[in-house]
Length: 231
Image 1 (tube, rainbow, N blue to C red):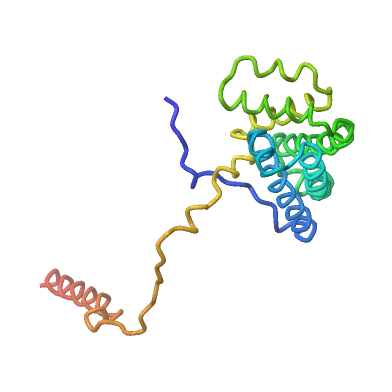
Image 2: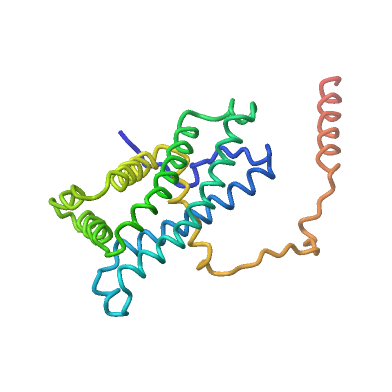
């Protein structure tokens, strides 16, 4: 019978004490870039077109903003991912402690970032918004379980479809790799009630005991037993 493991039983198998400086630079660049990219994708793909039109944001302005912010974040994440991948592959001690899943995830993320940055070129070729509207329609169709959502991708450029396939693959393998830590972020910690643990210097009188009392009473009992046996 299958049981659900609690989050406290998850472990990241961290290797942060090895090549710490490279890990800090790579991890910060990677995570900051990925967070910006994820927020941009959710807002850009799931926000209805009517909302952008209501605020007077044209398709060209939206795509230019997405390319600029997403491009900078993508380059930062790519540099960070490259540092992390190099560290995991070429540090012998880290390589020996790495699983196939660890290396596979980093390789997929690196490839996804390369393809994602590559979509910038095709996006600039269609600033009229045709490609973006198709992708937005597909994303909303997937979220609302529309069976014909995939038909909207038939006329998009191959690079967009490749980007989507790699992204969905990463999403599918997330529960089975260290990427699962995304779902164990301690957000609840920000809203927990505050408390303070204070250690008192005063020791209650009844808590003070003679450490030798047990030994003395034990010796006395042994002495009485020996005297009785001698009689």
